[in-house]
Each structure stands twice: as C-alpha cells, then as structure tokens.
Length: 251
Length: 281
Image (cartoon, rainbow over all chains, first blue to last red):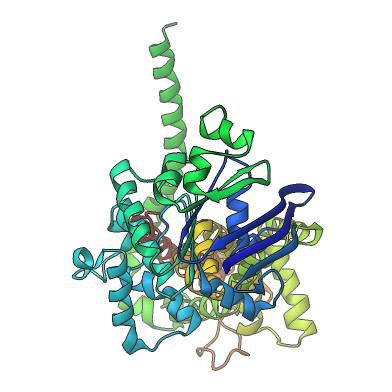
C-alpha cells in the first residue's frame, strides 16, 4: 500500500498553475526522487506533503493527497500540527538556529510537548547517533550550531527533523550547498535512514537521483511526466521528454 | 586632469564634509564640559535647589527626568513591540496596513511641540490626569512609539525567513514561531531602538512643557499624579527665566543632561555591537 498517494493534484499560485494533475504513489521506506529542470514544480510538490505552501499567500489546491489513507489537504490547525510532526523537512541551505546543538534538536520536542525534560538527553543522543554525529559532538552539545561545518549543520538539521519521530522526511535539494565528499556521505546517510523513514528528495542532480533513489519521478512544467523505478527511468524511459532530459538535451 | 588627482580631490571633499558634521558635536561638548564641569559635585547632583534656584542642586530635576523616562518606556515599549510584531509577522499587505505604515513614518516626523499640545488636550484635560507625571509620560510614550515601532519592525525583518520556515515545518504555530524562533534573535535590535528613543525622551522639552513640568517644587513627587521637575525644562528656566543664576550652574545642568543622553546612546551602541558579533547567519 502506498504511503503517500496524490490524486489529480492541481495547485495554483494566484493565476499561475504550478502543478497539473499530479498522480503518484510513494512507497513506504524507500527513497523517492523528484527530478526536473528549475521551475518545473518539484519543490512545490514536495511542499504539498507537509503543507508548507500554506505559508504563501494566494495558493489554491484541488485534488487529494493521502498519507496513510487520510486526506491531508483538509483539516484544521491541530491536524496540520500532527501532519508536520509526521512529515519532517530538510531544506536546501543547512539552516540550524543560531542556538546550541542541543537546543536545535529539542526545538521540535518543545513545540509538540512530546517529551519530558528528563528524556531530552536520551532523544538528543539517539537523534545525533542516527545522523552519525554523536561521536564527534557529544562533548560540545552546548556550543553554537553555527560553529559546525556545512555538512555537520545539514546532518544536524536532519537530526532536528527526526527528533520528533516522523514517518516521512522531505529533503529539498539537501546537498546543493555541499562539496562532493560531503554529498556522498549524506547520500550514504540517506540509505541508512530509509530503514526507518520514507524519504522523498527533490534534486536537480540526476546522478544523485540515480545513485540514491529507489523510485524517480520526472517533472516538467508542472506535470509529472513519468514515475517509475529509478533503474527503469534511467535506462528505459517511456516518455520522449524524460529521455531528452536524462540524456541532457535540456535542463 | 588625471583620474587619481580627481579621486584625491573627491576624497578631500568627502573628508571635509565629515569633519563639518563632527565639529559642532565636539564643540558643544567642549563648551559644556569646560564651563560645567567645575560646578559638578556630589551636592549639586543630590540636593534640592535653594535660594530661588541660584544655589543648591538639581536633584529633583534629575529624578523627575528618570521617572518620566522610565514610566514612558513602560507604556511605549510593549505597545510599540506588539504593534511591530503585528505589522511584520501577521498583517497582510493591503490598503489599511500601507496606511498604518505611512502614518507611523509621518508621526516620527511630527514636531515635538505638537505632541505636547496633544498631551495637554488628551491627557491633562480630556482624561483629567491633570498636569502630572502620568500625562507627561504618556505624551512622551506617544512621541516615542513611531521610533520604537520602526526599529522593532526592522529588527524583526532582519531575522532570516528560513528561521520561520524551519520552525513552521517542525509544526510550530505562528505565535510559537515568533516567540521562539524570531523574537530572541530580534531583541538586541529592538533594545537598541528603544534606548535611542529613551534618550530622545530624556532630552525633549516641548512635550513635557504643558503636561508635567513644574517651575519649582520643594519636594519630590509622591505619585504619578503629581507634577515633577525635569532636566530640559529646568535648564530652560534657569537659562532664560531667572536673572542672576551663576553661569556655571547652567552649564553643569546641561552637562548632566548631555551626560545622561550620551551614556544611553553609548549603551545602545554596545548592545548593537555585541549583537553584530553574535549574528553570523
């Protein structure tokens, strides 16, 4: 059964239609990549899944997006909070708060009143362990997160997202600010994380999609042109446009 | 003419303009310090005026100014801060908010005597607070609101959008986001603006002229409904209204006033520079 299911999803920014009839099914505990040229709507689609588009004025959606069989596009504030607890997000620029490493990780816990103070230590340790930062940082948990390297910051942001125990982690070009070595290590981490989480990654780096993902969707001008196994998309694309993009004829 | 020569001339002109800006400030300070410093002593700062203000100290005027500045901050800081939060974080961009912004900018430019007259009509007469510390503090607070709002809006706007975005993506509400991910990082900027506006409140004469200032009081005020003496008005009186006051006393009073305003400004500068060092995002 699909973890996330979109049915005839349409989205407008004012009068501009950014998503056109998107139908896709994201499988649980796999990495799904969304690729496509700039402005194709891949980030917009990603931000539908935790309703981050709500922050922008004049956004309208039509159609359905179901996570665990529940339509997430409806629902009041408390359901929105639950949605965002269930669906974590990692952004393009590593963006820890200018607070300590510890405070960054417990931010979400405090918002959701998820844990008691006594449990914070354990949760911080587990979150940092799962992004492989614990050994490096266990002695400086209370130093400012902005002192970390870019890669460490991005790992910290992943730890901050998974500290509230989500099911799904959305990643919006998480490696575009990182050098190739760091990128490779973050990709390694993603493969590790998919044992516990369903991951959707938006990337304009096709090699990254090919390396890391299980399924890939190709988007163009707001449409989901093709969605299939990553191997299939990259070796035997069904649509001419997908083939053109993958072979580098545009984008 | 060679480009480098032109450049030298341009730099010289720019430098000259800068000097012209700084000179009057230094000159004022020099005159005030030179003439006032000899008269400043413990007695001058801590005793009541005597002998028709020709002798004794300026203690009640100092205290009056401190009361006025503190009470006006108590009104203007929370109101200004909350208004700024609303304008920067909640308000939609429409005709009404544009009007409000325009009004705030214009209020900042209104001359202080107009605020004084407004205070007289509104607080002294209409609300029947009388000529009192309360009326004076409220008048100063209203005068300072535009400054505090503008500084606070700028401080809030300088907090990166990504902080709000992350916070919301973690499930925080709008208010939780403001409270935990925006305000803490804007506080130093807000404080800087608030202190600068306090300094202005301490130095203004016109807004307190009709609303609170007393020519001479034998005692310190007992409540906010009493009149009070205040430094700028006291300076005005001893400089123009009473003949035969020793020159030194006038300059010493001016020096105390300038000293208070100056130390507040320096305090604001220190806070701001600390903030800049911490701000690395």
